[in-house]
Length: 358
Image 1 (cartoon, rainbow, N blue to C red):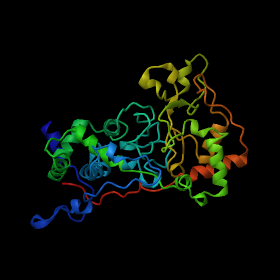
Image 2: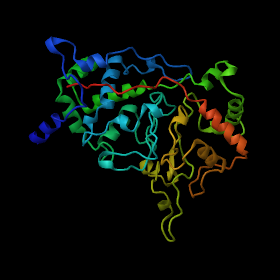
Image 3: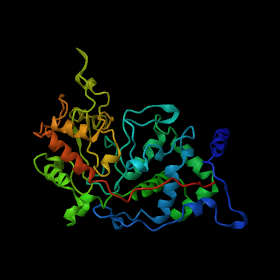
Image 4: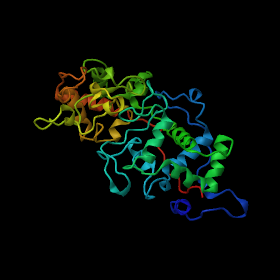
């Protein structure tokens, strides 16, 4: 076991030109990733840091390192940021995620945007996490994601004096455990905000913020199309779970009906058959940046996704009663897509740190 821990401790960090500063100067990784004030929430974002006192500048700095550090994966190749990419609204541009050793998952990484202020406290597509910090632990240990036992995550971090110092600064004492790793990760994720989109500026009174097509799409979204029955509030999600038929394939003759879903969704968490094939309503913030769509990436474009809803989803024994055909013309579908593009804003963009604690 000692040999294994030593091996973990010696895992190489992402390459940098200088790993330590001479003569007691500030280490290069601290210069590159300083403690900064919490960001000002952009227009329309539900972010309220007064309601999340556990999110502090020092924890955010620490979490930013951890979020991008590939040493926290079993083969040293992946980090949280490998699937939650800034350019794609902290989601990804692939149908499903790829884990260590090239393993393909069955779900697409959901976006991390305004994530600390949901209507209901449920994270992941199936809602199995009840806090943002609990969510942060999942991909670390998942055998087809980062595949790192949580005790090994702690060992890797604790083996580096630079990380130990950052933890002591963030938490005011030297205790270092997986709960604090997760809290720091969650603090960073809480600063990935989205707002000041054209739709927000329109809501604030700037009628020129939306094009005529986007305004017509907005009227459909909140009117006849009824999109806001589930995509509601400042994050455009009710944090609830619905079966829309995504992933359904009619089972073979004689096979049990639930086998029509390769992924049972929420039912695997609740044990309630009525939740079969149900998945969480995703935020529509930055939605145009993260094609393909649905939990399994089965819809290639945003227009395909709107057309899926227009058709009333895919019939199956557990289809949500809210999923019904909507009489929309092709032009109206285009107008809805145009409005969805007006939900792209700012406040989330980031780049990886250039160096990491040693």
